[in-house]
Image (cartoon, rainbow, N blue to C red; front, side, top):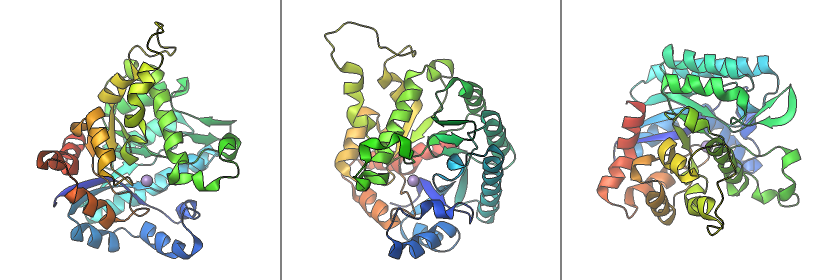
Length: 324
Ligand code: MN
């Protein structure tokens, strides 16, 4: 299929590139590093070869979220965003941008998002899970009360917020002790991100800011598969849900969330997601350079779904969501 738009597509700057070392064996690092630092060369050739019209680019992970010093986090976010703006300007028909945000400082994050959207023409933000801060040992999740003014700004700017995975901190990883293979994309990324998304849904955030649009990668980080059970466990026990939000979790998931196919190229999983969240809320993505563009495209182009759904998921939903 030609004309696809892909939106979980990463790059790195020299200051953040080493954050991605360790996700592949050492003998693959040279290749992964080169892929991360390239924007206009191999990436563009692969896009042409596999029918990808546009990519929305984002910084690698965890990058800004793992810089506890607020001043440094703000500096790296601005540097990455300025660099990305320059790269997109070289080929504005093919590349759009998600802002990296210093979420350690909610006020600075709101200001940086506004600068990126209004001055640099970015189409949203991509944030790598919770943030670390010099002010606390605890990971900062964005349902916390200090983030409500940040979310008001996101709603006002009317741009999507992509909640991208990162691994839990060592202090919060005891369930994985002795089983390092479960970290990262195998399991820990999805677990971490799904819980963060559920915290947002249960917190009442979307009652206060009903127009927020949150994107999850990897076919929804497992949430479509679990959505019925989340709302219906022990249905014979007639008690109100024990969270601040007003509605059922599935209502927020269906109303405020979008998911992408990044790194999860499986028709059975896509069909489950289509049955839960609907084909209007699913968007094609690859997760380049951690996954291959040909693996994503060859699967998606031939997946057993209707051509109308392929057009929606492949590009129409993205055009609408980002006004492309
Ligand atoms: Mn990714």
